[in-house]
Image (cartoon, rainbow, N blue to C red):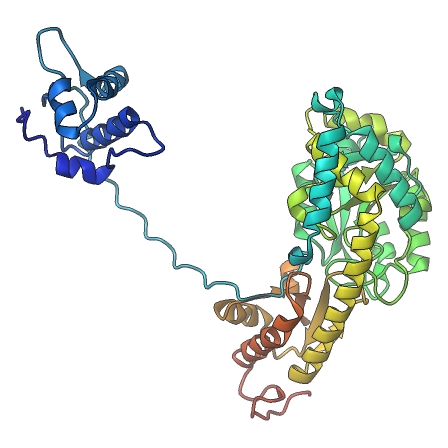
Length: 488
């Protein structure tokens, strides 16, 4: 099929991508427009395109623009040219009918209020101080800092982290025992690989607990054994009844129950590790945020030869930084390196920025301000829940970035979470962190990534979600105008 060289349907062609002057070069824009017309079948196989001089005059371009566009499409196989003949379309679009597009799932309602656990106050990220730390690092980094990174982390940050953990968390740490990693999950995967290489095949995790820890362990080839948590923390007697020789525990503030491992359980857990010739992996994910007294020291200081320590800045600064640390017993250090031969450390400049941020006292100042802010916010949340959802009972230590809201068994918490999501409120069901659904009912409510003025309307949406899921003869919710026979 041929086409008129003076009637090339340029109006249609220009609708695809107008080849007017702009940031893109003219011959590239013209080539894109022609390519699209050929792919769409508007220029069919064998169709002649106008001579370069004719097209250049019609478009008001130099002839060079057109010849460059033609040359590009000839090189790509869309056009072909022979001496003494017109340049023609040589590419044939697929004759197969287009696949029907899968229907798009309905868009999730936008999140108006975020009461899910897991995030700090992202609005309060110390942008100016962090930018100053980055500028200082870029100005002072020596040339070898820009080379291949040490897989265990930059020595400057390892030294800084060890010093920080000794003075603030009571850890027994030094630069040689610290590995810089991308966060707690990354640190746990590395640890589990090392334990697997040492012949440990079974790991105990807390029940309920953070599912990503379970997944990290199984990805490293370990069998996972859930062990219950009560008001004193991990039930060590139950742990002793499993084949596990290693256990992950949130000693300072367990997620999601918010319990603190009691002193007796701490001592019992360390003795268990010695008797089992095993290890404890301490997840110190948000222990810096304690509001009723000074944060409890880490277990790792009790027996650094048997206890790993995992930490990060994900809950204190931002998970976007991807910076954490792993403090490992000396006996496992060589296995840790051998089991993770290709694992990369976070970017060196980010590591040095964090070291500067800590060394200049900005991290401590940020934590002090965060503790004051989160304590006030937690108090406001608890008061508001007491006024608007009086059938709920708040649980968990005054620490961290979340609380538990225990509810009567008549409440369908899963349905409440779904109803809240439909209204733009993000929540979490405690059963989401269990391997099996429990008889008790509770919601995990985070208050890190929400502002104080948003708490009352967020709790109001929670109240409405609970009302939508209770049976006719269920509970009383203050302010609802409904009275039922359940517990107040």
